[in-house]
Length: 73
Image 1 (cartoon, rainbow, N blue to C red):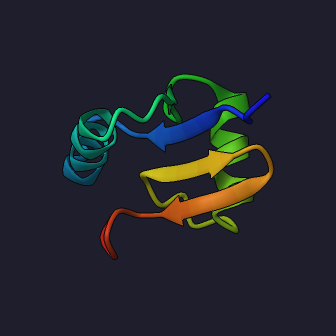
Image 2 (cartoon, rainbow, N blue to C red; image 1 turned 90 degrees about the vertical axis):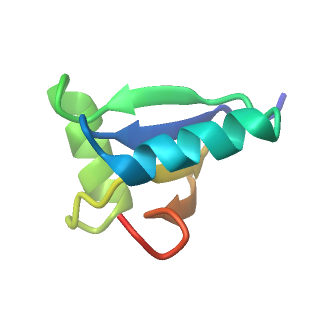
């Protein structure tokens, strides 16, 4: 089974929206987690980003795919 791709986001983030549009256009399935709504999701984001909290951050399983989007975020 393929690990679930998770994208951590925050409200009003233009780079998160760019990532959403691009992933959907490519037919990539992902679970979106707003890091401002749950403490456990925020903690996960901080762990994946080494405490920078940069969004969007995309992970698959334990592997960080990208922090930020195309060098921004």
